[in-house]
Length: 90
Image (cartoon, rainbow, N blue to C red; front, side, top):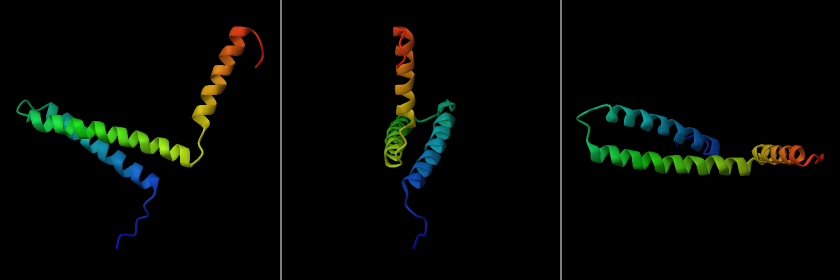
């Protein structure tokens, strides 16, 4: 029986580590002049799919943890820019 807890952080960490490993493998294959093009294309497709999944997991984690700092920062910056442009304090 496995004792590791399945958390979104654990899944993100594992997928990220695999993504890094996959990137290194792709780099090695690309530098090999005798590389199998079909294998490279398949690895690039998997790399892209994993990147999309990783992005969704990161977004989901942000939503679960209530981390709205990124959104708050963007809104504050937009308000500051409008305030400066319009010459009024918002």
